[in-house]
Length: 161
Image 1: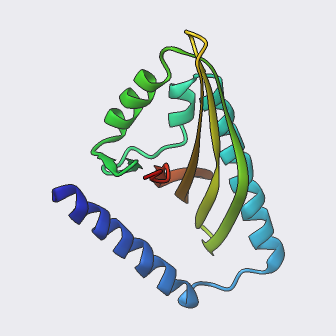
Image 2 (image 1 turned 90 degrees about the horizontal axis):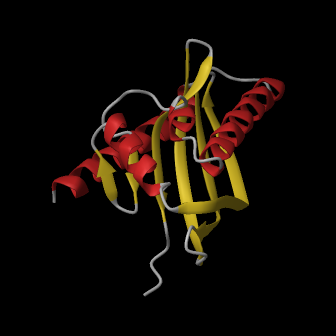
């Protein structure tokens, strides 16, 4: 039940940020495009790090805050916990790739952007098994000291039942 409350709190916070965007400083279309391009670049670097099994490189883009990652309904209390789970999850994998069929970036302010995407994960395990799974993800990026960082990320796989 505690996790459900945390998830609800996070969703409420995102809704407040979203609603507040009408009060944001107006950004010219070229400014919005520059932010979107920067987010695409950072996300691409994160994807590459994950596909190359470099958890520490992936997490250099993640802020050191609590409750930063939710994976399939499980809230990772700290960045360290999320990093350790990611390291463990990459063990026993021979090949990993992510294919996106939908990507969207909403610029909320000059220093906040929301990434949403859906796609398919393909994994080949060390024992030769091939696994594929669809996913959906949401990432809140914030600009800190000139770098776009992950404030919060949520990834889940659709329930096949």
